[in-house]
Length: 555
Image 1 (cartoon, rainbow, N blue to C red):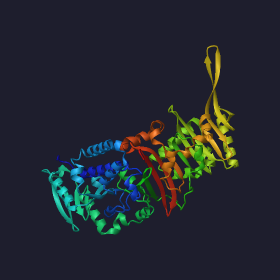
Image 2: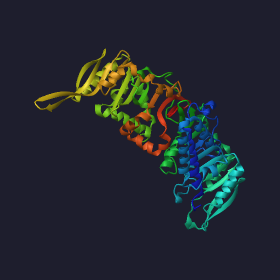
Image 3: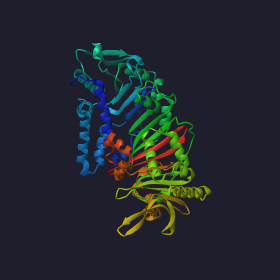
Image 4: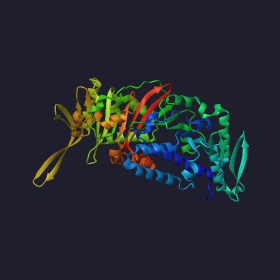
């Protein structure tokens, strides 16, 4: 083994195991035997005992990767099992290629039911002379402590030992710690440390990080496991799970900025769990620390009827009630630089720009009842949009529609009515002339259209889209794929965000460039995703909850 940081090797290996397990998990479908267990295990990360209350982040896999691999093989159709096995083996080989480790030989024999990787501190030594030094801790449960110790001994004997680097042995509060020691200051080696504590093997990027972990475990009130905010978040998670992630959002922001302290002392945490659903994989989230958050029960117990006006070929669909209030909460709760905020802003801009309107002021402000918004893709790969709002027969709606017509006229558009079936549709058009030999033709370019029924107001980018909305034979609400993924979401919620990822991938990449960036960073995890659905479930005791479901191929 060439000289290199032993901790880097082990951390990379652990991350690889976690990712491999996650990819295998993403293949699991409803008919898998794991569904008999209710989606996972009823367990929480035991390694939280070693992690400080101030830790920026911790992510845990709560099921042995081998169990997930076996379940994945059972769930994949026989015709695809060979391909699935090759993908699995190739991923393990590629991820571990630079570590010198072999998963089956070095890790599998002793690995237990938990792998936790944590950023334990932003600057473990608080020494301004050596810059910001984050602390990293890897805690792996072991089913065979002796095999784990044997693995460590073999790795140490083949590890990064040279004339300038030696190993030091320290007894700290009854625990044996082994770490690198520099014999030549100019060598400045990467320092690693490890220890076996009970049923866990701990690895850290510095012995001080291990000392702090041992302190947390022995003075348990210092640990994340005993933090009130952590326990409050866990109490909102009812379903069995396969993995759990905890993020101290100000701490994570400081870590990304390579800062020694967060910019704010306000506590805001996000806890995410992964579980199996019939449609695929579900992530439940609990957000704590939102300003002025009050208890709020979910507004809906079933999908809004407005969805019945959306055609089946949606790429993105959003539905709920009281859009004005919803949009204000989004603006107040999202960091402007976050991917979700950028995605929302790009969708809004794709509608606002051609119409030259302000959606929040000109449309959202008067939508107090049901609503549904869709981005559409045609076979020619052209884009379109459709918005449906409940007609509450108020003066605000009448005035709002008249205001939109007035804005169209101010832009030099013609406003006229056209019959579509039994409904009159108002279209905003720009007349253009086209010269031909010995003749001149007049063409109308439709920039937008709207129709008002007894129950709903329909706005779209074309007459054809309004006609689709008025045709109930092709309703999105009766779409089997949508029904399937919605069945995996909590029945009581505040509405849905639905993305047809498989069919709309090319469209999404073109219209929303951020999607391409996300794909490049998580390509292997997105390869088998068909659709994504998100819903929020209100707030209780200062905790805002939401669920994301990933529908998978063959599910």
